[in-house]
Image 1 (cartoon, rainbow, N blue to C red):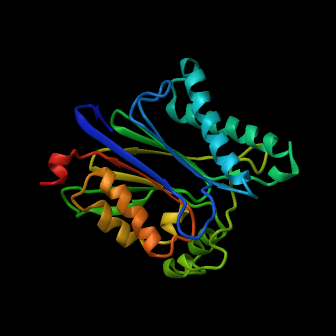
Image 2 (image 1 turned 90 degrees about the horizontal axis):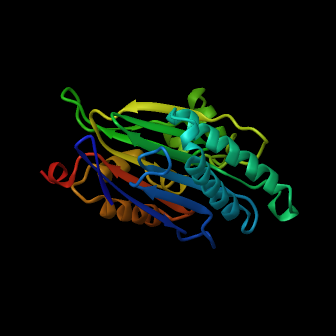
Length: 264
């Protein structure tokens, strides 16, 4: 898929795979370069959690409710971050009440990271440990990969507190314990980000099925390789599976350069 944003060729590709170990896929992705309500495009990764089918229900229903809310309420709100956060807050409440309808759904929830590119800015919201990375370059610095979002997890708290190192965080026994998720409580705190697109080469949204299996340095190498977004998304999934594929793997790759510059 491709779209021209302010004379820049924007391309995107998404993949959502079960992995090698898990019996079912509880992740969901959404990737649209066409308008969704007021938003000119929309990209989402959601990683469900809960018992059999509950995690799948949480992620799929949260994504559906979020998208439909934006479509139905865009005429009422032209503040992008406020619109996205309100939509996710309403989706959170919906999942919370849905979880009370059956014992099978008790405690279900989902991570959620969503982004949209509008003009010269990239807007993002997130809850949980699904991430957004940016591949960036300026005249003064080489290509760098930065994690934009902050994980809402026990391991992230230990890491930021200086208790463990980055490498220890990757293999920590509590790395799957998140401290914030959609659907767990009636309301949820949502982080938001607004970053300039100047200097951006690529943006990656992913579930922890990728980030827990593949080091950031390897992600950087793959994102900066002269490949199409589709091939890059495929390879990132392959890398996670080659490392063990212990979880569902979801990726959305957004390219700001256009293939001509990327292959130069």
